[in-house]
Length: 150
Image (cartoon, rainbow, N blue to C red; front, side, top):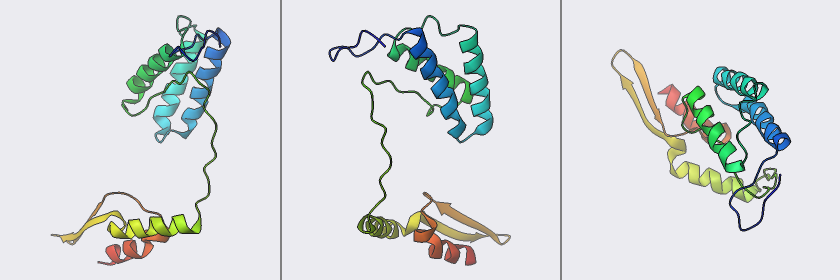
């Protein structure tokens, strides 16, 4: 990478760095929630890279915008995007929560009824369960059992 100073909002990418970023993105897609879409995107990205399809992309912001457009078009997922930062970001390992933090989260979850919003028995003996989210089983397990028992 070259041409970066604190006053600029972008960097110029050399071909090696550009390739490394693209390959790292393709590898990270193994974690995407929709494996079939991930495989489709990975194949497309790697084929474009092999064909020199990113040769005209010379800046960090341009690469992020180009790849975001490609990710979203191939996955039909507007939330899938690549962000750019001109500064190196630290790799942070998630810290283990303290017992106090766990108890605070349990208390907040209980205030929301562990995200169980509505439970009904519909005609035909069909159960309806409206959830706002999924809480950890160690928090919401008893509530989930009670809801399913109903």
